[in-house]
Picture 1 (cartoon, rainbow, N blue to C red):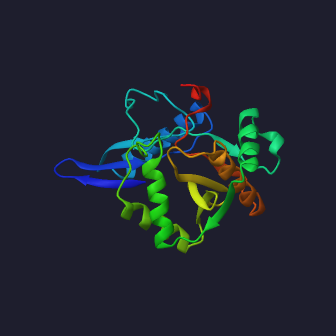
Picture 2: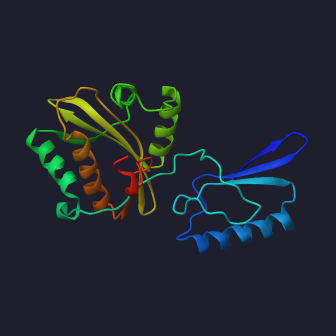
Picture 3: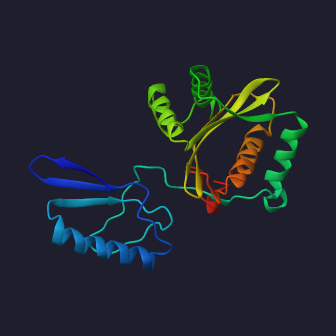
Length: 226
């Protein structure tokens, strides 16, 4: 929980991407407990911003209002597998396409050159317009290095003819891996590179005993065609 003091008013609290709840009843129970705790122990906190990722658009009580999320909270949760047959038909087709095209996927050193390359791929994604809300390179460099130091972050590139055409930075926490950042070369030849890179990442995750791959920021399954 993050907190910030607001002059002359009190403290505001923020729960990024949480609290976790499996359904609306569980979320109501958690937030009721939170209200009781704040009344007794933290009366200085005048507001709490919550962003539960798994339960959306739930009005808990008159004390809560719906608000726009600070963190992108749409996602697809994939069970990590090494069985290609468990994936959808479209994904299988593009993974095989990438293999036929000779795309090679590797985890790479977080060198200055590779950081520069990854940032360029992020700036080129989205049809050449770049990742929406892209920050300065120094932000990503600090983030990536911080997680790499504790062996919880890995940078992957997909190569076409030796040239990086797609990149993914993965964060690993416990049994979950998070697709934190990604980018791809605008106008790339390969249609399968972006599918193949995630498939190869899942192979490595499976070998490490990680069971969940969170495609953070991807559209929810009921809006894939929107």
